[in-house]
Length: 305
Image 1 (cartoon, rainbow, N blue to C red):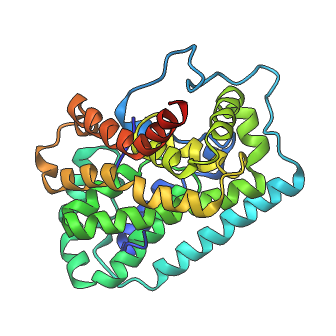
Image 2 (tube, rainbow, N blue to C red):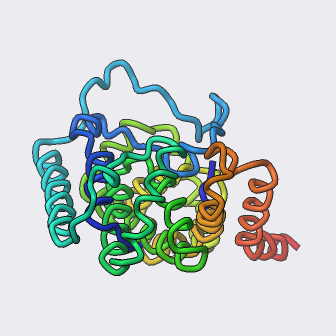
């Protein structure tokens, strides 16, 4: 499902918690299991098996990650640099009552407890908290680690709608941009290995829409047509210019981010993450998406006439 909802700030305690959650182990990234972003992982909607956008099982002969030693070393170096940077930010954070704050939000109940424990800390050290928050969000987006939806909900609970949406959109856009450049470095063999049919479908669609590429990318970002993680990885491979990728991401993530952040204000009433994206919400998202491609449809109609 499309999630619609970038340095924000997590203080030292939250950074520790996130590090534990975010870096369970390098092995968890082994086949670089691309965690479906907010739209996939939380909404529970999947494409039909015969659809080009449906997830296909990996081929039996592809038991190894198709990376050269140089590519694997480059990926490990980038991951190490990001991890060291995140740890250095943690070292600058004020001390706190870690036994109450070092809780990993694995569900909404854990998130409510974490929110209560972080409220005072975020208020007293807001600037550093926001720095930590954004760093964690960008780290998770860059390396396709699931769980950013909890950070989006937390932003709404701690900062309100306006500031929360700004933090989430900027963090998500920065993380997606980092993922774009990481994929430019090592992504082609991975995407071709994991999603060969989906990549061919995406490449064909991009080729047909060269003149109105921004409108199409906005549509993809707003709606659940393709997973955001796949878009981040595949965009440089199919030669989508970074300026179009960046602008479509910055604008296209606003609707979903607003929905998720606003839900964080009523965190106590939320029973399931799936409740964020009911049929009414999906219809609204698709309507907004169709508005973004309406100029293209209109132009094509006039051309035919």
